[in-house]
Length: 133
Image (cartoon, rainbow, N blue to C red):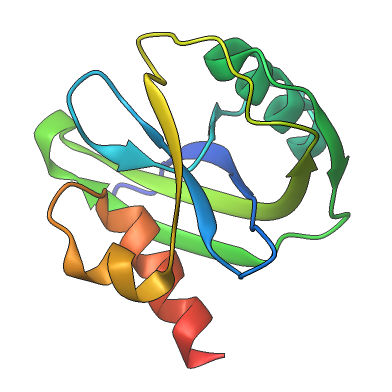
């Protein structure tokens, strides 16, 4: 039987006025979209608010009702496949509380994301899709 289970995460696509994407730097030096694993029975919007709060202390004040992107990919270092459901979202400020999941926040253009080696594959997939649209 073919393996059909994915680790599902909700991610925030937060853009500034220039269209750059907000990424979070993890303790390992890699950059990622804000968000994380969806808990059983949780709506994507509720999960995204919770995850951003847990990672950064930031409050999400608006989330799109429908996702903008959906990507699947192998997480080789952890030996599983993941699915990211990406929703456009807005926050009020970048005044965050550092954690092991977020030691810095920075905006990147899609082109910058594709050029760097310290950005996770899922983020690169989203940047490529954004450039294609």
